[in-house]
Figure 1 (cartoon, rainbow, N blue to C red):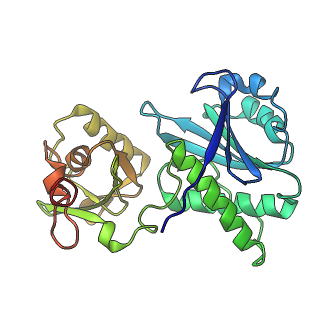
Figure 2: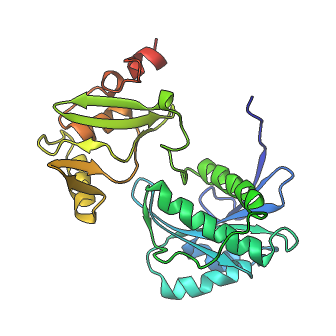
Length: 276
């Protein structure tokens, strides 16, 4: 049985999209969400100079992560000054800071390493960390690092950012597929969004009715997130759509009904499972 979790949020300027902090009940870690234009405002918050790790993200027009960079800090928000001068891509920072007793230097380095590896494995967005940190996580520190990362992953999800590898964290019974005209694609439905998984095939022989999906296809192909393999176009990342039909339109082309196109391993459609 899943356990309940309680989060407390402070909106420092009273605006939902402004600087805010998030704290889970009984946790020693505080999350700070800092829009880049409000960096100076964030520096006025007490306790925001503690050690931890941070994510610099670039959101696209649909408020999804397009690019991400992960780093560590020993002096909290002050570290962002360097990135404000040297990195142009990001528009928001999310910092996970703890008291000094919770995060030793080894813990910070190990957590940074672990988070970067997970970001690359997720295949959801472009990771700006091209070089893997030269740090080996001690086997005795790993359980603590995994526990902290689980909290980071949970808080990021509440903010609307998925950082996990969807395909590895679900069993086969939860994966849906669609097969038509020699194209096979895989996906997961979370109740509010549909995720098309990596290794899904895309039918470039048939255009999508909505032009935005055709543009997205071409952009992903140019970036290498869709690759031509043995005469087929294969997705190398995870894509998220607002509806099952948007997802099936993207992979199959034309205009489709995702509620009947996507089926589980027993051949039952999304419509049969969720609507009847």
